[in-house]
Image (cartoon, rainbow, N blue to C red; front, side):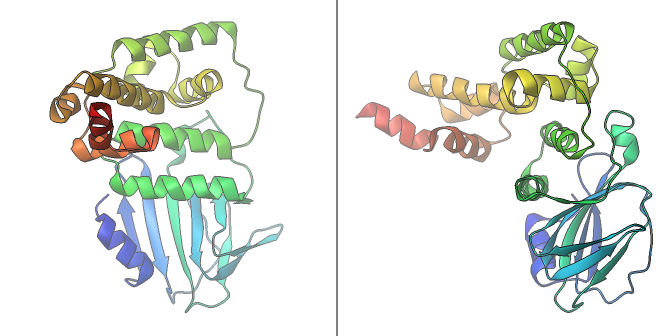
Length: 269
């Protein structure tokens, strides 16, 4: 993004009325709004709108109904759907919105209804937006975004065929055999012949998570194995392509509950 983590939080909590910024994912913008006095007239967006209410409440008026949103609620509005947002108190009003270019997901997933996201989906969306601020690898974020779009989109029949299972197993084996390499969705498209959305959908059905998350988990597990054999942390970061030492420490603690340093000390007892 073009704004720092610190600036982002300041703008949400205290700062400017309105700000747009590009994310590091092509086709995705983020909008921050707090206590903005401009009149909310009926309008449309070319993009898919995904966001959540930080503070206050509002009535979202559509052509056929009105949806009430309050602090903590998540919202989804399809592209080109006329709507009007009317905050109940403009002086107590803040929200964050992602705009996703509809060309990004094309015909691979559809969105036909504006709706309020359930609490668990809102938490996932908030977590994704927060990760946009700290994650420096676009492909990791793209895995998460595609997973969210598949979950939030209209539900259809998406069976995993035997042929697709074989292809996904091939992707799985590729990840295991290339643990110390960068593995992008573009690369997985090349070796599988499936589009990114099919890769995410089918891989998740077989392995519970996305290829990027699985690759990261495997790298952390490999880092643990190397640490147990006395390898240096900095060497491990370089070999397994962690962004920096802090990245390894953060992911190691997520998986094992302790830092690499504590793990090494415990092995010495």
